[in-house]
Length: 65
Image 1: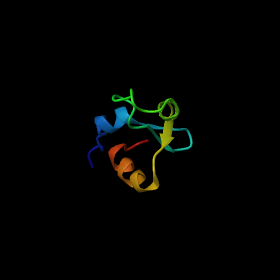
Image 2 (image 1 turned 60 degrees about the vertical axis):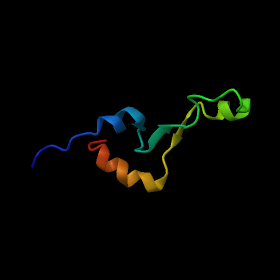
Image 3 (image 1 turned 90 degrees about the vertical axis):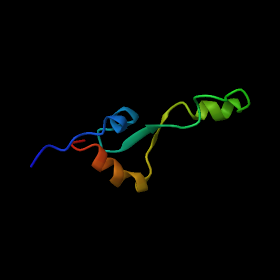
Image 4 (image 1 turned 120 degrees about the vertical axis):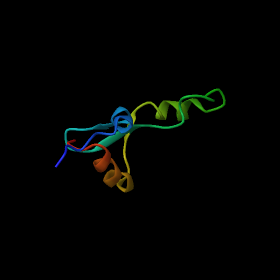
């Protein structure tokens, strides 16, 4: 059976922690920040844990992780 290929677009956007959780960048910080509250843009800084509904999709896209 051939090797399962990694989706490179997903590999650039998602990271896997040591315990196997998938982390992603928060959305909405790239532009139109002038009218957003400072608190809102600060909260977009870190990574967030991916929802349970997305995990089964990511496991197919990132085999071996």
